[in-house]
Image (cartoon, rainbow over all chains, first blue to last red):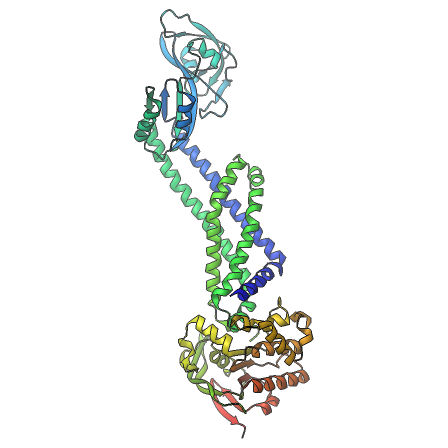
Length: 364
Length: 230
């Protein structure tokens, strides 16, 4: 067996080095196939996420915890199954004229809220406010106009704000007035976030999640967006099915390209295979150099793909984080190597069952 | 004096091929036996079934019907690994195009059957065999660095190194000039006789029949004439 392994090693090296052009093409094909699988898969996943988000309308969170939470409680929430995002916000109820209105203040960088403006911008100091289009229309307000808000506490004085921006009335855009943290402190002196906003990935049961959450947050009130979440779950299920089907399709196409490539490679070695079969080398022994060659091709192609992926992604205009891309690649790589090795196996098993005279056709 | 015994017995071999839409009868009821130490030549026009018969006898291509008995067993009743083992231990092959493996040296090419059969001292035995065919000093050359005659000598060394009981040769001189061809034939027949192996050879060269113990003429897949040396 040792001498057969040594012989297989010689053929493996010879297979890879006798035609450098073909070996390079095989490595490039592995890179391209895996890159397209990872990039298209990631893009589809992101698109599916966007579709799911669009089902949430103006409030992109499924669960709201009302009350002050400690850092430990927030960390525990972040590690719960099904949680895709946790944001902290400060909310207060105020009177705008005679009407009661909720206002909000949050970290605006990287928020899940859609903050699209038809005019103006976010507030930048304690004296500014951005208001939704519906409120601006109702009160006849424009950029630069002033609006008075009064805390819903008896004896509170009204506070005046200048309208810095008008949030667009498009579907999905936030529908509450937005203040800075200093601005909201003028109508609610508690001065710290009192809302923990939780977005789920659509894969967990909302009621069960609510019960688990209640155990963590104790007395704080947990509000569940039941109707919106039902629509999210439905969207998630549909988009997941679509993504799985498309990813499978990409996998099949790229696997087919690998099968063709490995078949061409084997055809190039038909003569040697024929000679070895004729002198009594068993089929399974001839699989060794073929599988070895495939492993070497993958061993070169996969790290190369990891290096090239962020460049390709950026070239194609995908804004996915390179770290995310590499983590997706690492996950998909296993599937890909298994598919590649199965392709090699299928090709070789077929190839090794070709009668020896056909393999030696030119020489016999 | 070597003992003479039947090493291969083939009965009622039939083989058909489809060529396009028409069926070709390559073998139409061939019976043949091979005895150790005998050199049998197959002659016949192109398409008479010589090469197909060689393939079928050597276990490379199964017949449609009929049997090939070696050591008391029909070789086509064996599993693939048993048949591979039989080929590596009992059969030797000499091809018209030499069929040496380009990445290996002459020595490594000759070693293959010994390694495949798991026989000991493969390197020493391969070197001895190369010396017997006069190529000891070319042992570390690759096929591409050798002449056609030298390559065919390596091929003969590879066919005989594992001391097979049957050597199958398909036009071993077909790609050589007449002088080299005669030299190779002399070498092959001498080594086969030394090893007491049976050799069955396909040839178009009627000058070679002098060396044969038996000559079989094939036509349309049948043996139509048998000439045995007195």
